[in-house]
Structure formats: structure tokens, C-alpha cells
Length: 287
Ligand SMILES: [Zn+2]
Image (cartoon, rainbow, N blue to C red; front, side, top):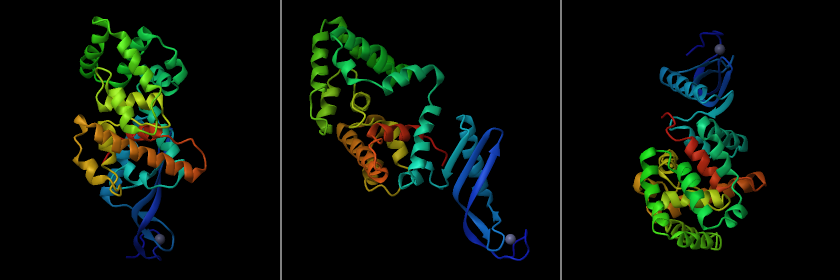
């Protein structure tokens, strides 16, 4: 087909880089499937692709992004990011996390993100209980009914005078072999009110270099990654009723990815916790 712009070149299927500008927001889409002219490089998008670009643009504008570079993928943003060796893209993806935190939750989020194990170590029985009750549980359980239900279990320590028992769990949490995912989960799950997801989140804020949160969001987002070797196991998981075994596998996947990124960029900046932040931020990506 002749190009309608230059009227000389031939148009053939290829990919294009598309830049969209809306007000203050600039979006750059890479690898967009398009018909491309071999002479003037003008590109032509199908209606379906155009629609997808506009949807993504809308999502970026809503998140308040000023500049976003997105590798276009018909299966969702994470599907293409996961295999990417472009560290800039991963850093952008991580930045999206902070854009998705509600302003009223930012303070608690920052606190959790810079938690010092020494601070936890120094908490006495009551302060440790208060930390879990007033900080960790509200941070992890953002839905009101989950928070109330799980807090009720935790409150049993106080109403039955068993705060010392809770303190013992903290001591075990601060002394197990961090490489042992299963053991970490087992200890954290012994806190009343924490299932595998809640336990993994606690480990992730305490030991971000070793653990990531294994919850329903992580599972749903990982299903976008068609190239994942563990995909069939992910698809069999019940996102809202994860088992300890599921959580172990999910944390292993996050550890592996973080490690690969660190090798790629020669640093130790990537952690399973950061991978879980990216997975959370990319939940419900338009598909
Ligand atoms: Zn042309």
C-alpha cells in the first residue's frame, strides 16, 4: 500500500514510538504495533491500538504522572516490563507505586517503607502490640471490614493478658534464618489475625531485602506475565485464599527477579519488596 502522506513509500506492518501529550502530561509508548512507511517513517495505528493507547494515557493522567514511558503490550503493562532489561523502565514502574498511594496514607506508607529493624527490636511487649494494632494492620488491611475482622483477633492478646506471648513471636521473627521463607511465614502467621498474605507483608516491611508481600494483587498482576515459568501454578492459586505454599512460591519469584535486576545493573538496589510494590502498582492495568 502506498503511503498517503509522502505518496512515495510503501506501508508495511512494523512498530512505532508514539508520543502523546495532554496538558502537562507526556506519554511515550514504545513498540506500538503500526503500519509504517518505509520512506517517510510516518505510522498509522489501527482503531483498536489507538483505543488502547488512549485508555493507558487516561490512566497515567489520573495517576498524576508528568512523563511516562511505556512499552506497549497488548497483554498489559507488566507483561512487557517483566522481561525488560531496561533498568530505567523498572525505576519508572517503581515510581508508579507512590503515585497510587492515597494522600491520607502517605505518612504511614513512608513510615513502613523505612522501618528500622532496630526500632522494632527495642519495642517492649505493649509497644509491639500497639505497632501491630495501630500501624501494621491498618497499613496492610486497607479494606475496612478486613481490618476490623483481623484486628479483633489481634486484640485477644490484650483482652486475655497475653502480650508476652506476642513478644516471643517478635523475638523469633528477629532471629530466624532470613533465607528460609517458609519458616519466616510460619512465625509471622503465628500472630493472631495474620494469614499467609498478612504474614508476608509483615516480613516484607521488616526485611525488604528478603521478602515481598504475597497477596491477591501480586497474584493477579503476575498472571499478566505469560512468559513466567511458574505461570500454571500462579493460575491455580486462589488470590483471596492463598496458602503458605503459594506465598513461598510468590516470594521466591520476587527474590529471583530482584536478584536478576541487581546483577543487571551491578547494584543491590532491587529487593523483593520493591518487586511487590511494582506488582501492586500495576494491578488492574487495562488489558
Ligand atoms: Zn510515507
